[in-house]
Image 1 (cartoon, rainbow, N blue to C red):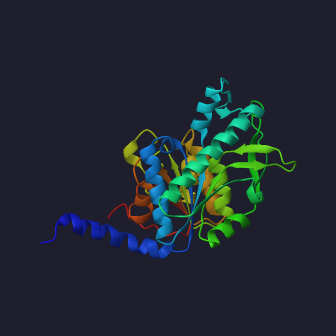
Image 2: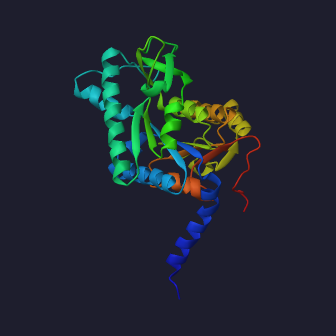
Image 3: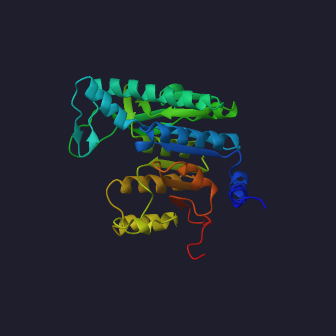
Amino acid sequence: MVNQKYLDKAEVLIEALPYIQRFNRKIVVVKYGGSAMLDDELKKNVIKDVVLLKLVGFKPIIVHGGGKEISRWVGKVGMEPKFINGLRVTDKDTMEIAEMVLAKVNKELVAMVESLGVNAVGISGKDGGLLKCRKKQTEGGDIGFVGEVTKVEPKILEDLLEKDFLPIIFPVGYDDDFATYNINADDAACAIAEAVHAEKLAFLSDIEGVYKDKDDPSSLISELHVDEAQKLIDDGYVGGGMIPKLKNCIDAIEEGVNRVHILDGRIPHSLLLEIFTNKGIGTAILREDGEKYYNEHE
């Protein structure tokens, strides 16, 4: 008799089949951040997941931040990180450090992908005019060289994908006067996913997903439509850092992205579990007419 463990493995592969068929040759944007960037084991898992997506026929693009690493280097050179309303103040010196650190992180990720036998190219939003931005205006003070995306020029990404490269992007862009700005990685991933008409956008961060009750971890919602997501915001069910994330998700779907996933990058292989299994592991947000794969009452 065949060992049940092997039969279970076959089941898992068969469960993945419709998703592999459905998303073959489709673009998937993965926003990579949080603790999964600091832990070497988690980092390897995320990169293996993205490489697997590539090798089964998806077209992944990685957009990454590096906030915690930037803070570490700002401290290393003896500068004091400054924040206004929770937003890092990026003066000229901090901007220089941020760009250097992001470029360093970027090439580490490129090397990891290449070591797994897939060709990757690391670029910033400056390359090919990918991300145009303007200075972000905030209440409570000037936060310096922090930009918001005004335009995405996706040609460089289309060319890289066509030549079978995996693009890895760090979110630094130009304004109209070619001054350099740091861009929030969530915002950049959203804008890029919209511009390349991605089928999926996945946010890897330090939260499990969206809860019906923010104080109750067992109330995780597996799937919700955009109107349900908006209602959670309006009715005050979500708070803090989840509000801008959910708004980003809603914007991306309204601009043509099919499904947006919010995942906990601290769980090994959360990306694969979310994309290739019926229930998934985080929260999927879908268009009004999007079909739910998972029935809570099954």
